[in-house]
Length: 486
Image (cartoon, rainbow, N blue to C red; front, side, top):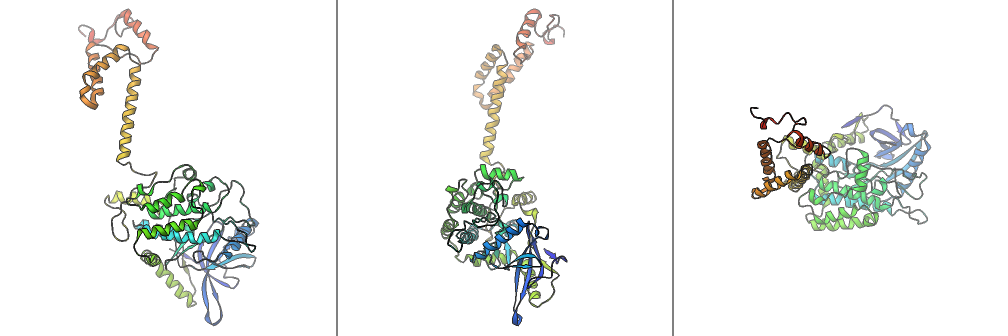
């Protein structure tokens, strides 16, 4: 899980020494830096700079400046803070706080690979803290007191951090929409991660803060059920599911799912913005009420920190060793990179593999209690109700086919079949099949052939039979059963 120090990295950006490479995004790369001051003062920081091949494109430079101006105004413990915007050798870079922790996406991957889940209380806590940070961003105003109408547009597990101390922080406002942005998104242009977009965002319509509320609802659903809500095989199917399909009911996927949290999910995931929470703060209030209903310990931050130490003990040790060498002034040849493993993006795939290897395996909560993990919506195995509906559909289809077959037979055949059905009425569900068998025996005994099904063939067949006998157009040959000595 480490990335080697890349030789192409600059030794420094301004007064910040570049220590290593952390991650690369679509527009910028994230570097680990160090600032050194008087009397041995030093502090790790995160440096974000535009990718070199985009640094000469004015549109990307404007987007980077917009992000710096927006995030620098937000002062909230649940938002990653920005210290300054700098320029070195013609390159723009942002200086942000270094957060010791993991993304919610990394947390979900660790839980799913261990066949564990986060639990209802901690899921509500993480999303409630993210609501607090986003509400602070939504309420941002300019120097004249006018609302900036900021919308994050990319609320997803990768842009919410959980520190090893149990704190939750929102980051990456790179594509956020605000009233005073330099850049403008064209009508119909879509930005963000598809699985966490709102319906209006998928359609390229104008957005407000309720679009972020929808993304928070998706995040709450996935954390509390260990299911991907709108993950589909391709992007168009994902967009169609978000716009047209009703979200799956958590209580039907997870036995014993709390009703209070299900109501929150349902309201946050409403298709119409007017039916959702008007603000992230309103959603946070309901989440805190649900936490009180769930009971248990109120020290959710400490419980989250304990969980992080349990799941990420290896990475905590690697990062601690890196910081010890960092403070000692040693040269770092590698830094821990962000956890990215596409093979465990889909928990249902992991579950199916585990169940094939061990049919008794099921998800278990961290307290050790068994927790049944049914498959996600769209990939569900048929339950008893679903099997009954399929049997009914097959029977109805069989009856329709029988009626179509009868429509191609003559009145004598239909009368004979009805007589057989009446005689076998007490035989239950096999009456129709038995009647068909009786009729087949009668035909075989009478030496008759089955009549042609096509309507136009009936008059010709009847004429042939009148002219020369059954089944012989020329009148010379008969059915072997009716021919003496055959």
